[in-house]
Image 1 (tube, protein in one colour):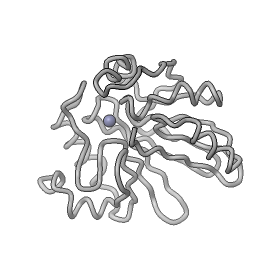
Image 2 (cartoon, rainbow, N blue to C red):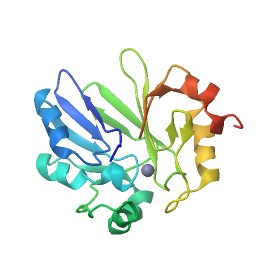
Image 3 (cartoon, rainbow, N blue to C red):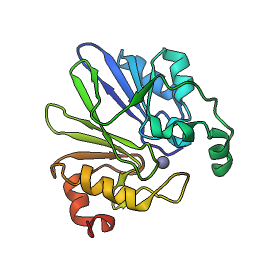
Amino acid sequence: MQCNCSILGDETTREAIVVDPGDDIDEILAILARHQLRLQYIVITHAHIDHIGGAKKLKDATGAPIYLNERDIELYQMMGEQAHFIGTPTPEVTNVDVLLREGDEIRCGDIHASVIETPGHTPGSVCLLVPNSERMTLIAGDTLFRDSIGRTDLWGGNYRQILRSLKDKLLPLDDAVIVVPGHGPLTTVGREREHNPFLQAL
Ligand SMILES: [Zn+2]
């Protein structure tokens, strides 16, 4: 699905978080096994099929609960329509276990990831801000890309809203924060502040 899936593991407790398991669940399970990690959280930045399509399979395989913002539940229930739109078979859907909210902290060993609501690409889009020993990392879903931002012409997308999220929630972050976008190469907040054409007007 060409979606960037992130796997965060604590080296001491061997607990892990998987963010955005769109597909390739066997590969994700192999990586968890190779690093002897036990999955504790399946976190979804937003309910587009390429980010959430494999969530049920991963939950079935590991027992880990699924975390998603409430405002994307409706979109998750439209999996048939989304699959049709991109021309793939419809993945099975399961229950979301925990509703993510602004300011929630996901604790996994020494990893403390905080939830930032960034509506616009979808109504329930969130980013995860993950401090680590060296630099802060932002898992941005499809809100911010290198040189671009998420499209807002699909179900529930809102261009003014994504611009407001970027301005109010992401641009205040430090330049050094590493950005892991939902698609494409990594970048930093500073690089996007300077070069991303969508952020210049903000
Ligand atoms: Zn998306």
